[in-house]
Image 1 (cartoon, rainbow over the protein chains, first blue to last red):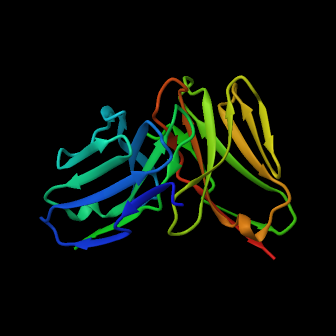
Image 2 (cartoon, chains in turn red, orange):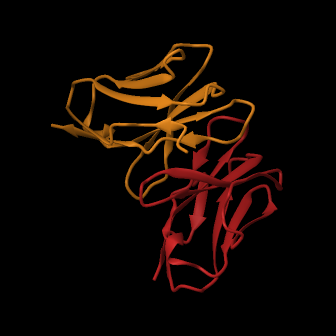
Length: 111
Length: 112
């Protein structure tokens, strides 16, 4: 059973397109996150939702919009994709503060 | 502004020997620290954690040491095994906060 799953695993698209990445967790956790791992390998928090409420909103372009239809799902929509958006995006979840469980990642390549 | 730093990008160790990974942090408000392990094409998986009220936490072959005055923590893996070859990330948070700050990772290679 996959605890935190993401789709798609790979995404190749052209500049200017709009794309979405989906995340689902079956751990019953209340909090979900999106991280970006850039070319320098840093994992940086982008957003977090707790019980469908946005609790972390780091400084990211407003082309990025998270959506949480329920507490088991957190999707990431990206408008007008740019070359610099190429990265690996990780979804994670946690029940409380501290330990987070990560999905396998989505490698986004913008050409 | 990186608040968590792993200054050694890579470490090579012989199987059976000790691996020591280091991590420094700058934010004195951090009170909870974690180590994650990551294999290629997979997400990070939790390895071990320590709160600031302790200076050591042990779980099997893995031990984390915390030196609050130096704002430094380390992960010891004894003995190192080939399956330990991975990228190890140090992370820190304020326990009342959901946000984790990660270091850049250290790639460990265990040689047979």
